[in-house]
Image 1 (cartoon, rainbow over the protein chains, first blue to last red):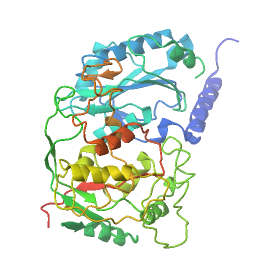
Image 2: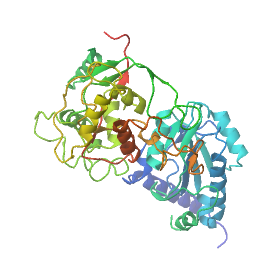
Image 3: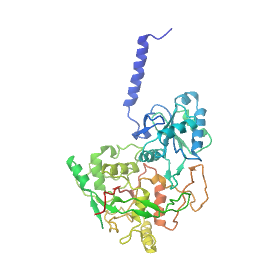
Image 4: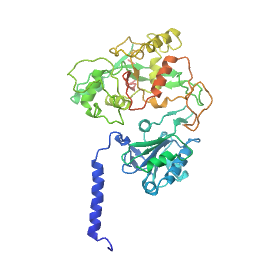
Length: 188
Length: 263
């Protein structure tokens, strides 16, 4: 076979569109974090709907930019974890980092943070309201609290979500690649 | 005792063809407050926190009130609420939206998750109290806004915790405190909005910074007032929960912003 005819191409396009529509029509599972509907904003200032990464495996965590101790390590850990994934997963994985400091983590700050940590197009650094952050933390099992100094105490958890938004693995290992997370990613 | 009624909300709901009894909210003046949780700039240090005035439901939300909510919000009925928002025991002992009509049940609703409690408060224009707001309210007794320094007050509250939780909770409506709020102690545990901000170090007697990798920034919090066991038990319980969890002894009440000067 040489090349696709125009009609073939149209047919393929229609199939792809139908597959997308079929996925959208299937209800989100009850144990999916995408049951929550939130409109956030990403580092480019674009709207980012919580759940819009449905269809791809996702690494999700939370951070705040002025954090000097662990947050840079979380970015580093996730970057190295992604690199450790098998190529098919590595190509389609998305990383969603939610700020729990929306007051200070404005869009320009998110943009700069993304650049500083060499985040490529797979990464979305997002902000919402403080109530949004509290809800996402509740879903991801992350604890955090603002201190009078403006710093935050927070637990460091990285969650691997499957294509439907179900948490398949969580790790609190920071500063290194968690092999269990890499293994779990083979089956998402 | 100052009391504010939800007149405007009731009118709005009545206009929408919905009959909702006005919930009773009490005005709390706020002010400077020393929490059992350290508020200082560095871990373990105490600083006085400022609590803005707010209005707090005078009693925990009752089963009758929650049933009315379920009738209007079927997505929160048992069996409909997704697992990520409510665990398997959610409302397992009711109320159900189709329980008998208007059978008044003044017991506090329990077996509700944090997400469900949030949705209820949202439906009446409120939210869950923050821990600081709850603790501020719970410091009061019948005559004082802050009775915490009184050993007799502490002992009275502790005696409730000493009772086994086998008996079903009684109806809401215990004696009012100085603000007109009832049942903050002695009936059920209550959700707070920032329940997942109350984590404490495994050994919070240790002022050293134990585990800076698991807990970013400043380590887990250490308790500022280690003698206030009654309140510390609340913190311990809440910090052990996940948002979809439900307990037979865990209910909630809502707050809303103060509407102006107390009447």
